[in-house]
Length: 151
Image (cartoon, rainbow, N blue to C red; front, side):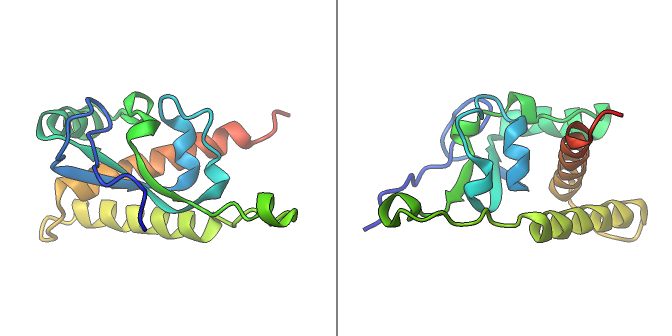
């Protein structure tokens, strides 16, 4: 029996039935509002953020026109993701953290490809893809910068 959440509200205003979605890597959850209690290492796969039509216009303009990330305004409680099952409590055994590197590399590669295609006038690239590409690149860049030791 499925007991999870079936609705996908806008991550900014909470309205049901959003019109747009972008996917971010699990590590980027740390950049969302109210994300402190979430163990991003236990997230399996991509994290989906949904936006209603009104908020999507704001997000699109913020990212494409202004060059700013919307992640700090997105509520982590409204994000959609899958947490790995907690067998550690049942089995009294510790599992290793999943390696998110391949997923991050794939998402970054796709983001760079979308941005390259966007510069090509003949390529058909949707605004949603460009917004997602920028957000993924900025999030991973911000997280990598904060993890480097200060010399």
